[in-house]
Length: 296
Image 1 (cartoon, rainbow, N blue to C red):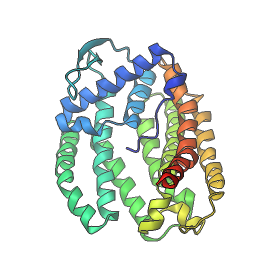
Image 2 (cartoon, one colour):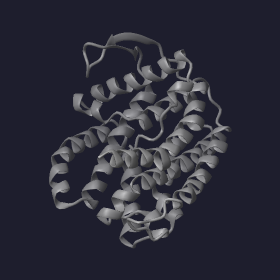
Image 3 (cartoon, rainbow, N blue to C red):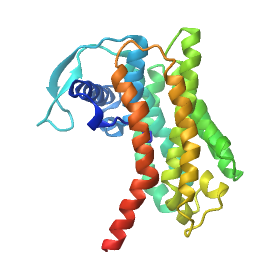
Image 4 (spheres, one colour):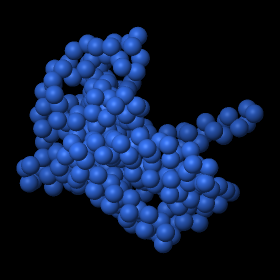
């Protein structure tokens, strides 16, 4: 996934951060268990958020125990000691998302990048076969359709920001909707997933503006605002406003979700975490790069 959906750690209670870290480490272990040791390397904040949201909606009350980290054996972590459907789902989502993100990068990348990524695709392809074997063909189809729709929009040079974000928004809407069998909650979750997906896509596009200008890769903001390497940085304020609309809508939907646990953790992520990450990507990160260039 993209890695933008993360908590604001300084604002979390210690016990909440410990619970978040336990879910993060449990998902890491689940990835290794389901898809092999190397799959632990694709662990992301986004899939961890999906796991915690799923646990909260389903009311999974998991117990944890201490164990040695598989990646760093010198460290001990808290792990889920019982089977968790939410972790299994999040692991499958991670594998499917990684495979199709890789396919997207290969399609858009230079010849050298395609050559370098093809060996990685061999591993990702094995993980994809496993997730289908485990009964997650629906996840695979969601990401497959998302990529097809995205590539079609890119090939036509789509200048509509909303249309460009639609495939990712639809995909996360479908995935979030699967978390509940209750019709009313399913609709709320679909709405939440839609705007979260839109926010994630727009964040990724905003983050890649400078690189995409140089490489000529598709970027809806570059096309919509006709940006070049000398673009006025004040345009970032307009982009921030566009992304704020998606953030506002996802928060409205989130407030309607019936949660059975982890409320403080999730609220931290969808409020403080999202706003902090948005500020960092659009403004702070660029300021840091500018300072580093001046030092050189």
